Amino acid sequence: MSRGLGSLRRMDNGFERSLIDVDGVFPPGAYYSHGIVTSGRLLFVAGQVAVDENGNLVGGDDAATQARQVLTNLQRVIEAADGRMEDVARTTVYLTRWEDRAPVGEVRKEFFPAPPPANTLLVVSSLARPEYLVEIDAIVPLR
Image 1 (spheres, rainbow, N blue to C red):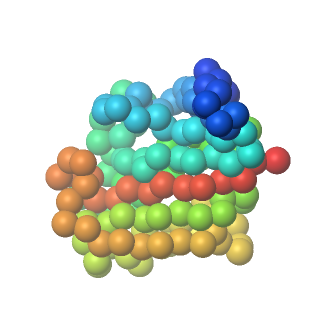
Image 2: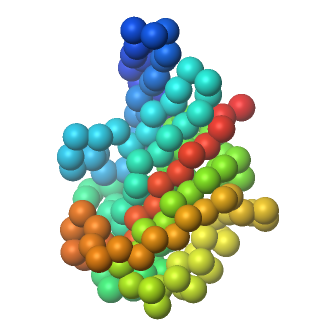
């Protein structure tokens, strides 16, 4: 399902970064990339939300179901860069409701083997669209 590294951009300072081309994840709806790999083989994954490959919301008002789709999208981006979920070093989880912390945490356990990545949890008033309950971004060292 993954496509891998896309265009390479060399910066003026010699730093390189590559766009990740991803199959199975809806294209960004704004001006950003799903994933960028740096010349140091570090993958930065943009915040993923609960939309399927056609852009349809998955999970409605159920944060656990949304989290499962979010993490599926995150996994697709990571695998498109030849990364692995067990190598994720850091995630940031954004929730719009405090009470969703436990169910989202349980879903995270399905995707991240022990030990889990370092994580920051933020409860925010809103995400990019009001129906989004969960957003997760990640930093992944690649082998």
